[in-house]
Image (cartoon, rainbow, N blue to C red; front, side):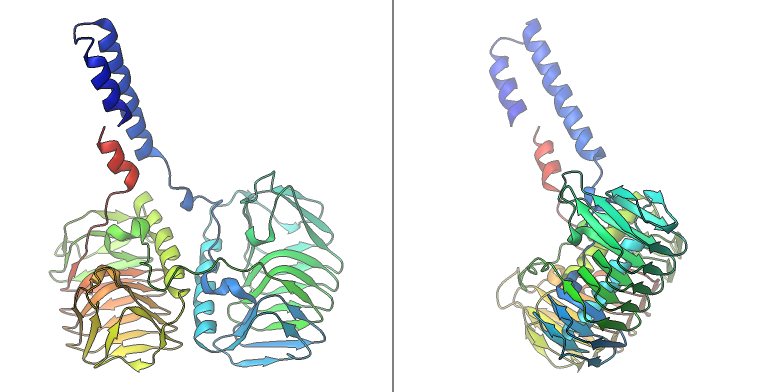
Length: 474
């Protein structure tokens, strides 16, 4: 509006004057530069310095995959959990400020979100390659990567440089080992909630040492006697062992209301997005974009067709993959409305969050009732697979919209021949769309392949971002 006001004011001076011409040129140039800047400005959420979203795992001080065992008066500032294992021992004498979750829906969601957070941290672009012992280093915000192990035999200092949002990510291909009495010190605004240790195998913290940040280990975490952690100890596939420890955990931000829609960001324009490959057989038709990232292989187009654009490991596909990660974490972290299990056939469900610690299936018709509200949101969380039988259907009634239905799948999704489903499928692993399946929504795979066969996927376009709409007025 600023530029149109200038033009209206100066027009009174007459189009023949030099001053009028200068104003018009200046305003037009400024508008052009502004619009170009909007188009060329990178999305900050995809930078290496962006926060790692923990989703449902954020409330946990300790999360194990197989077992959690404790000796002595350990104290945890947050939740304690294990999934898919069930065994937690040593509480008491250990105590916690939060809640214990053993292979329940919350632990399953936390485990799924930990997987996503681990992948996110591991995929960040390296700021500096490091190796061996980090002792004596003072590091600014960044991503520090080692192809093998990292250790700490003394003090490591992390300097926020006055920025409380400074993010520190440590990537290692193998172990993390801290020596007895070693320390991670935070200065100049650095916060433990913004420090992440992505450990390629197991972590062992030495007696009396202290560490800041969230430890995400692919295997196990051993926290020896007297260790203090300002953060979390989260193990993806192994055990967490504790012994007279103190783990303080900054509470995760409150989850979005259960009824809020899930923001897809750059992933919203994609009918199909794979991580490794996308393969198609037959006359599949996609209503939106088609992409793969970080993989590059897309086959079967043609004979497949699409209304949008194909993106193979380019900037758009990478941004969509990052935003899919965030959307998956968001959906998985929503507060449960109802715990469900097994087959959803015959159910009529109102807006809400429906959660299963294991798999969900559909052998007939599932009806989603918007009850007259076109903004009604339906989220289905599952710890494992989604499987629909041949000729099964999801039906929308009373204003329910496919754009407001989300399927957060903890492993892989398989849609049976001739079935139809409404909503965005976000699978942690792969998505197999068999012959003749119709999707009103999207098939988006975080870590695996999408396989298509003579399908129709209609995708509602995402509205243009607000800045571009404003710029278009000028």
